[in-house]
Length: 263
Image (cartoon, rainbow, N blue to C red; front, side):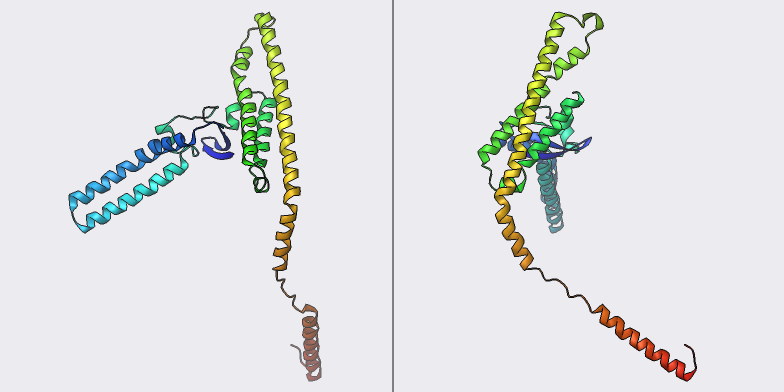
């Protein structure tokens, strides 16, 4: 449900749009990352093989083609996630802010209370990627959770233009009727979003608690099996060793005393 993208400001969690066309996304990944980065290497390798006609040229061409394959795999795997790599700016623009995904930094222009709600949504979403939850939660239920989380973030992000406009209202228009009505609607919307986020977080906590209870028997069996396989080390007989050393030292001291010498 959540991915981690590497952006210029550092790694951030990403929530993909629920209705994103994954096959189209993969096609665009090939067109925008694999072909532009790997195709030139492949063409150069093929040209070297045809132009030289020798086994050295063939080896060089194979090496270039192998590098092209590695570059293609790396570009495809990083496409859309590693947003700080050069290919991101060269082939496409940042598709966050709800176009393809949301991340916490898409909401930096909001107030601290709203940003806290965004953080709470992302934290609650992390529960649904927990292996304990994945073991029993139905995929359809996870998708419904995904949709609800997206709708909450979408509502918060949709208020940005109104907040920006109201923040630029001059003092002489602060008491205007339309401005007052807009602020009232914004407060009402914030209240509804806050209630929705709280309910979402409560659901996440409930699912986490239920997952712990459901998986407890299986985890207990695994724990007992692991403990039965343990072999604890035997502690050396330090006390006996100490007494043995002491007796030897006393014997040496007695011999030295009888001989009238010192060590």
